[in-house]
Length: 167
Image 1: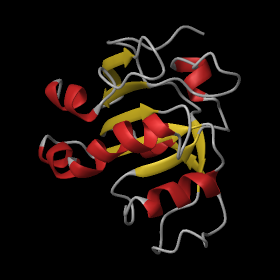
Image 2: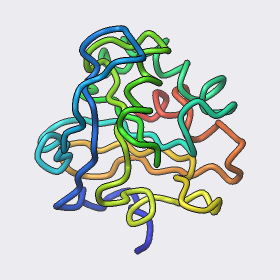
Image 3: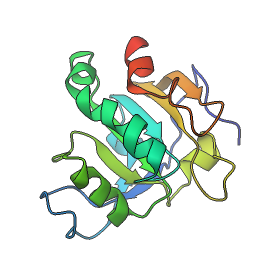
Image 4: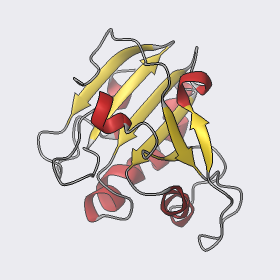
């Protein structure tokens, strides 16, 4: 399928896998569960960004930290949910959030292994099964921002600053 573009509707049936962050110990996490994004994000403003992989150099050093640092700015602009997806399993995503000091559901760390959202509706990285590096904003079920990095090593149009500037 082609990537979603501004004006498109958020698709039905989008599900991710996740292990909610309930404590700060990265060596322990709960059972993975299904996260029904189509249901949970209905009527909300959502920032979704995709990374090639948890703990990878660009994702860990340049992509995720600004989202964590600016979470209050996202909330002040009416964002209900900030979520990151990668092709890693939900235990890895859970540990990645904990290692970076994320608590509760400030940022959702979702595993893109259910409906393969990046492949079906976003942009794959072109590096095997890895997700691409991109960002989308959904407001009340409509895409209001959708940008893909020209190179998987870049963090510009998918970064926190770029997304904040479009809210």
